[in-house]
Image 1 (cartoon, rainbow, N blue to C red):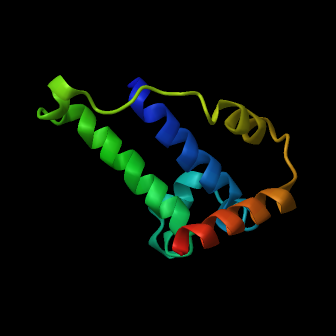
Image 2: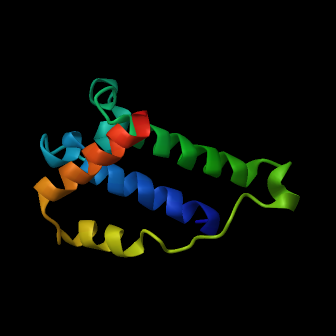
Length: 108
């Protein structure tokens, strides 16, 4: 994968892992995105991050961005947080609170 989209991908993955669709209803993240009934209940923050990731992926094949570049390279900012969520090393209640605080801040 192109290095410039790794951070966006990890942001989407972290947000989806924290979402009620995955955390409470126990659906797979792919199901939460693909199923229209489940995707309408995703937090706005996750939808915005998914749109950013998809825009980054579109930029990879956009010829006008081939010379300028698609964006900044991956910073590794979300690597540790992503690793903990993947390994199950987290407190679900704490993660839900983080998502709710981020989502309410995003709406303002």
